[in-house]
Length: 492
Image (cartoon, rainbow, N blue to C red; front, side, top):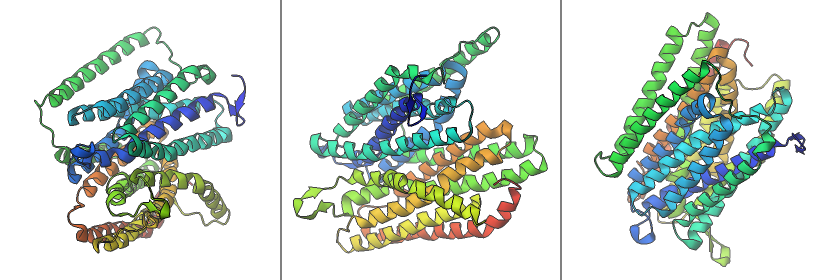
């Protein structure tokens, strides 16, 4: 491997820009998705009601997280991480192209499905290749992931800015076309620079008896793909009617049932010793905390984007420039870039003084910060209910508090799930983390659907309900954090 990238293997630059463009595309199209769905047909949208549109949003974002599970399996067992990333990038490009070109909701939904498949193939495997660049592990691996994480948030910051402005300049579908264009750039960049990866994540052809297992796995994948294609085809031609709101409710119940069944299996049939069972209880608490946090946090792309569009004064001074509603979704990743180093320093500084909060306490703080953000939204909604458009700083401060909450929860949760799980269950517990986020995204879409644009006076109370629930839950978690911490044993 020739040369370095900021003192790291040169292949890190390849993965940095691949993931940057993938997150650019994902957050860029997410910022305009609900707005496109609810805009009237005369304005180039589909004129779908808020309840249905936010349910679609929840299903899409939840499915994107869930798809990481089969995407990782396909890479590990069939094609290798590099091929999975390349195939995923092509699928994301194709999916966004379908969004830009589809004139019917069914064609649009097919585009969303293709994007979900692409994200499932690319997202987990590009991270796995980063790990493969550092076989020695240690501090350099942590530093490499920190640089990689900056690429994620850089793309997530720029994406909504570009797609939102493209939509304003060239029409409602131009944002999706921009997402497709820049993901294509990411695919091209990855393909041209794959040689820098020096074999990390490369496909290894099965040998001997392993070939038989590989053929069996290909058959299983083929049968599952054919069944899914038949179902999608039946939905597309109208043979199987689909109600997005009902489907979101059913999917929420299904995912919750999957989580319950998995944890029952884990405790009863996992062959755990006493210490592992105690730590398992902590992971259940963290799973619930993660789901509930993201149920509020993911209002960003649904109810809060609609609030920005309809009730926020987005005209800047005398210039007459109108801030695109989707631009507000760039605030969160921009705040992460600004404040992540501060939080990293804070935890280390507190640890030196033996004051570092435990993982359950950080989760409790995260949920309360998220609830505090909605207290600001309740105040903003009260002003909107009186007929006035509110200034952008209400949304800005809400996103800031939510970002602080995310910085208390996401990095900590990932770290502690790997520390608390027995070695033989680490991969499965990573899957449970994605399942928790998926559940939260589904619930977020359903909550957003309860906001009625025709009944603005009800919004303050609805936001306050989120405040009461989340702050109350956070306070309960904080009270329980000390006994839960004792169940963690010597895990720090």
